Image 1 (cartoon, helix red, strand yellow):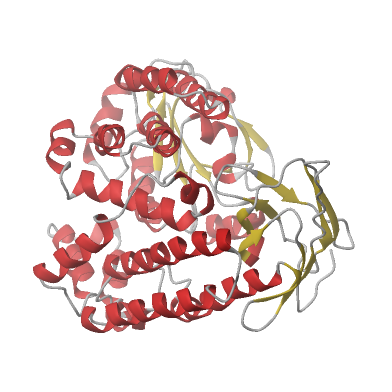
Image 2: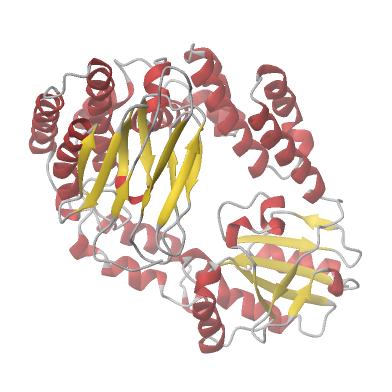
Length: 492
């Protein structure tokens, strides 16, 4: 695919009263790594596949009018009769052709948000995080007011109805991101970085307290309890969680509902229930069934929460009742398949199951399989070079390897770095003199072995017996003294 300083997409969406078919075709001029899709919030998605010249054509059997997401362009509004040309400019994207008015209006209301946004990992710029509530609320109120006036320039009633609702939830979510890290000061982060970099062997007994103090020091401003309550009331009450049409068209609305579920089960009315169950996901399931009435929205969150519950569990017996309950309550075949596969994976990787095999490359580009290690205990570390908590465990892992080097155990570190980052992994292994068996998974978190263990966060550790039987599918970390005791007992 040819590289260019701009991006051009030509949409030819043809439709008539005689057929429900539509066609999207055009040209993408971007980098070779561009992988885009056209999708909506209703679960529909199709890849935008371009040839070597950037030409593409997508056939759509049914195109529902509404909001869609398109690669780096973001939100666009489509109807079957639209014919859009999208060109990248300095501010974002410029639309021409039929349907261009509505989509240019979307770009206009996005512009003020782009000035606040940041890729720092905190959702908004540091300067925004230091803006006091009495100043930030009026800014967002003004944004909402101006955005509504902008959208009203369209005469499309359906579009305006959707966008009026969308703007409200865009505002709420921006306030949510601001509140989450309010007071974080970029000039006060060095203390935490230095504390995290202290080698394990040199950490004092009060290291955890030092870490906590360094984290809190980053925040130069704090909200009063009254201000926190005011923000929480705005974010988590006074709006409906049952608007199906909006849910199918608005990622902002679904994000707001998800935040509300999390809040209610961690800090709100369902906190005591969550504490008594000792499992937030179980409390979420109860909240969803009781508080969300719309079947479509309810099923979405029952699905995502049940899937999380199964993937995070170490034992199938502990989640079997939730698994069966969801199977009996949904008719969505794709979700049924996902839940059934997740439960099947759990049963195949829990304690006393025969571990699935893998065959991954080592630094010499030789394939190494797990089955080849039969006869020895195997302690597996799933990590990545970008993962700070993973890196923090390496000193303890090295000590453990050295202490048990004469014992019948193999230490295997599997990097979940993306395939494109393989050279970065190779350099890290060499520069840091990593010991044990160093491997890199074939497709990061999407690797079959990793998916079967339901891994979505790292570091994650696995302990396998000499017979290939899983001893622990979520083993203790190297820095945990109990791990050494456990291994010494097994290796006697």
